[in-house]
Length: 405
Image (cartoon, rainbow, N blue to C red):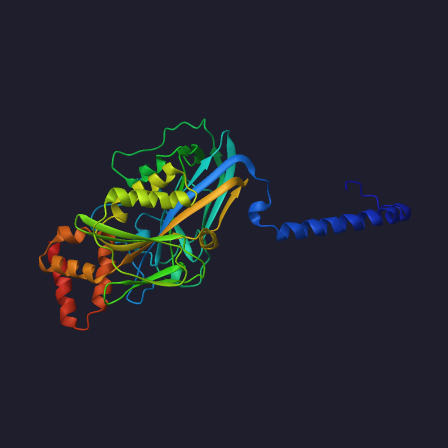
């Protein structure tokens, strides 16, 4: 009200029923708003679709639970182009202690016309460590210690307040001469997007981010003395599908299981499979989760080298409800459809892996050890923890050093 004159008694009494009804209406409206999920407070944007894929990577310890690990990779430099931004600096993540490495989530958008959206992602017990394009906010924005994720801390998050999704956005995306798996994620029919960065518009086919966490995932895998794998479903809901994978030199094998609910013991698959059949089966699993065929293919191509490298590992489809609980995603205006397909990857230290590494150490075969990439040191630490004799531990450390001389 702009009129500062107090109302007359008669006018005031006439307005009481109106004010009372208005108050009831506002209270009811507020109650409905509080009861509505955040994603439903605004109407869906017609024609707007959002699809996301990503990977949660862990290493199973002797008890089957994820162990802390640092991705020390002796096989080469970072797989990310230089235009990707990092929390604090590119080396911070390498020393950030955690059990879960959230790798290359990308969010695609599809729209027949120009649409502006805001996007926010949080990571339970985690921190967002890399991203592109430039966001409007990354939290927490204070200096953190390398062991922050093991103490009380706010969940990490990233926010893009104004993302322009439009078929008219030029497809002149940044690219460097050095090879990177990052670019494979662009090979889809997604609508290009643009974000205003510090040095002008930044264009891309997707929103990209990564992170580290100590959050709990739905599946654990314990390697038994026989080499079999005991799987435990920790959430009481079916896992859509899992794949047990084994590679030894140029031979591979895999086994697919659908909808495991509780406990399950799997024998190591015989190495009689082919890469083509494995890629086809993985692609079908991802399409069954709602991804478009070219998105599923882009995801597999992005991780082609590390998913299928030497060793034993388990892949599984993380239930979408669990993804939403540990990685809440908010998009405004809400898309008419949202698909989130995340793969859990558990690296397994099997007797075959231990024998292979021991043989490479004895032969000072650095090339054989490099096949394990960033997982070599975590695997090596798990092997050392099983050795009761200090002299043998010292000998293995000396062998590892000699292999890289």
